[in-house]
Amino acid sequence: MTEQSIERDIAAAIVERLGLEIEPADVDVDAPIFASLAEGTEHEQSSLNLDSIDILEVVLALNAAFDVELPDDQPEVFTSVRTIADYVRAHRAGVA
Image (tube, helix red, strand yellow):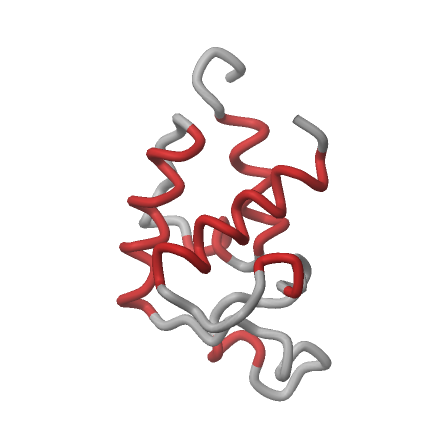
């Protein structure tokens, strides 16, 4: 699995699980995924605009899809699709 494909797979899993009206390929993998983190930044328009309730759904979807336990108590992991991908690469079962 290439680096870019992990980011795209994560974006696709988030979009599908939350029923977002965006194509996974259009997700800016460096943009903050939470509206509160994107506000007032260059990424304000490209954020997925998730809230704290959405993160529970994201954790469930990604734990299953990537065979990894994402920590719901470490918000820095969920800054962007790229930070989630970095965590997944480092902690996948059999890798860490």
